[in-house]
Length: 493
Image 1 (cartoon, helix red, strand yellow):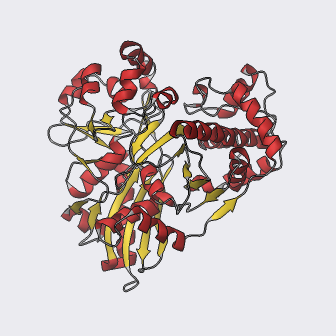
Image 2: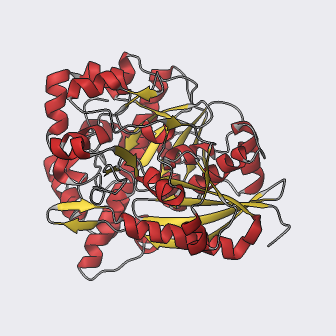
């Protein structure tokens, strides 16, 4: 591979799987090569769900070793990005105090409501400026015992923990910190008044760095184990959505993004947080982006519902692939039922088809009767939720978006892409699918001095990857469905 250009390794860990993807830049185009893929399966300890961090770190090292073997001295650096919110606590010796909890673990039940009742929404939103979800780091920490928090010398988020094991350096990066509800998005620092108000110690929070900074070389032990010598560890947007949005191939006009995967994150890119009264009412999440940007967005419970349906059917002896389920959906009756994907009953893992049937009964609708109808109901309802969120955000920022860009693995669901264009009534541009890896690589290129701006990186994305545009169809049918959706969805919008 030598001589083809510099290569950067994106270690992209999602809530369902992880990938090590090498990006090689020849001075004009970026090409990707997947060198390792692995599953990410939560482990159960008693009644709690955790992430198997030692297993994940072993997979990360396998990914680095594969890249080092494939690209040799052309491998410049590696960068880690993961899902948001989750963390681990380290003791005074730098040892992990147990496996990190998984964000869907039930230990936070009721804590958000208790804090909201005591402090009020105004204080909570004004401090952190993000969506007030019960799984946020703030509420996870409040479920910890005071003794554990006192014993902890440092809190590190999931990408921080992996970087610590790679480099020996403890650090947190701004895009990830902004997902936690421990961070003041206006001051770009920890929200110390909020921590005081809820009674959480701040001694375990360290410095916060910018995406595009180098953390230094791999530890000698990691070099020996992987065969990767002279390789730096660089901070991309360590929150995967921040990296994905960095790779949105937008060039002109107004645009919104939809990072589509287990979660759907729909929003816009700005230079400053958007925290007016309408933003507060909607709980618009102001997450930090790379290179001085902010991402006002809404978290939507994305393809999680399909994933859980598939797991339930597989356990019942029906192991269908996602492609097979989508084909069944395409052949099914349109709008057999409409659900709100963000209904709280859909948040935990479990028997999703039964919960969908229950939602339909509660909302006075017949339940979908076939597997295809269940999946079609989810995909149509997601598209309608996207429309509602997009129109609400447009009202908050007082600007209509010309185009919706879909990035991430969910973009492989062509049926959902078309449904989304139908629902939002404007062009939908899809790609790149591996946006998180691409955005991760772009920030490593910033660290290496190969590019210096988002505009430059996005131009490379447009040259390098095939993009597909979907135009709206069946407008009258979808307008009527939108009216049905408004009647059954959350009243706050």
